[in-house]
Image 1 (cartoon, rainbow, N blue to C red):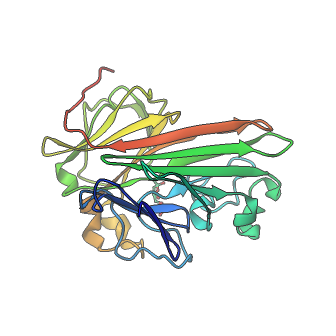
Image 2 (cartoon, rainbow, N blue to C red):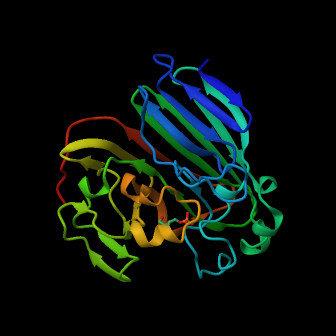
Length: 298
Ligand code: TA6
């Protein structure tokens, strides 16, 4: 059975092995589990809530129409990270059996009215189609956002992906030196000078305008754990909350879990993307296995 609907979950199973699987919850259309041959690839909190009371903590939350809290006009009253992760998406069905591929949809009718009204006074007509394709050693998540309105509007998009690692202090991310960095911990903007990103404290950074020719790799003890390709997503957020911040995050469990995760989040967040009436914007995150370390020049 490549695609099964089980309550609020849609489960995609590879035709080669039942151990390669993706689980998506309709709440936020959140991928909260992805296994390759039985090995979990994503981090999801033990205290993640699936009752719709708050976004699912872990996996791949979808961030739209704003990243973080914004003071930009029309966005100030929206909750942190917008409403896509707080809304119940519609399951649109299967589009391919092999590789198993499914689609989910979000439009104003799926969004809590009060929250939606806080985005430009609630009159931005939009349609989001989210496509998930499970290949044997690759997970492709793609988005298509259409302006179905008669006026232009603006948005951010981000795949807030939580990757599973064995130990954050053994974890490195490559191919970011030379990139513009907005460091949200020290509140400074600089050009990244470190040849590789390492973790021994809280990290919350937005790298902007990172060429999509650059492959990002999460490397642990010299081995490539995750490869991240981006299509049309110029910005990359890197986040680990570390030990103090997690104490304040009720649904982050176990508290030591910060050692087992790193968020590397491809998005369009440094600027607001303007979408004209009728226009469609598409983007993808491609996560795949692959063992070769690929160091790319600045
Ligand atoms: O993407 C990084 C970030 O914006 C951090 O600043 C941190 O707040 C994180 O997202 C999680 O946000 P959340 O609203 O899910 O607690």
